[in-house]
Image 1 (tube, rainbow, N blue to C red):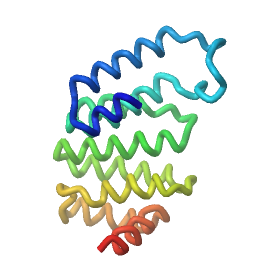
Image 2: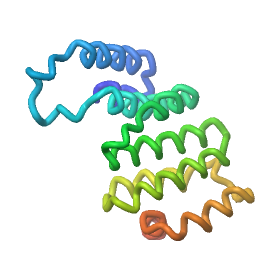
Image 3: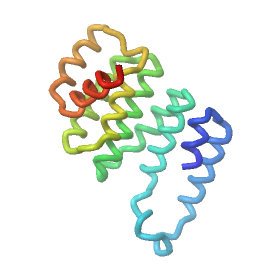
Length: 161
């Protein structure tokens, strides 16, 4: 969480140091001594946190690399967020086609979820400046329109105007 906070402030070096320390702590943990509430936190969760960090400091390549390692398959909600971070990273890397493909994967995952935070991630993605009206983006909008969470983003955007 320290790394996430530092990334939001734009302090990349301190963020990377905090991620390194978190990886060290994860590697040296003793699962028998851990409280129950943290047992879910594994390498995939750390990769997801790192992906968020690198997205926030605008390091698209690193965000993509970490987000691709964050999919565990066992936590749909976490996988949704990691997939959306991956989609965002592709937008930041000026690859809207891959961003759209990945975002559709996230929308499919999101069909199982009901979360304001999911809608917030999608709304941020939808508002991204490089999300222009190319043929790929128009096709994405047509496909995305069929998903409940995407429809919720339209409501959020209309209310904020």
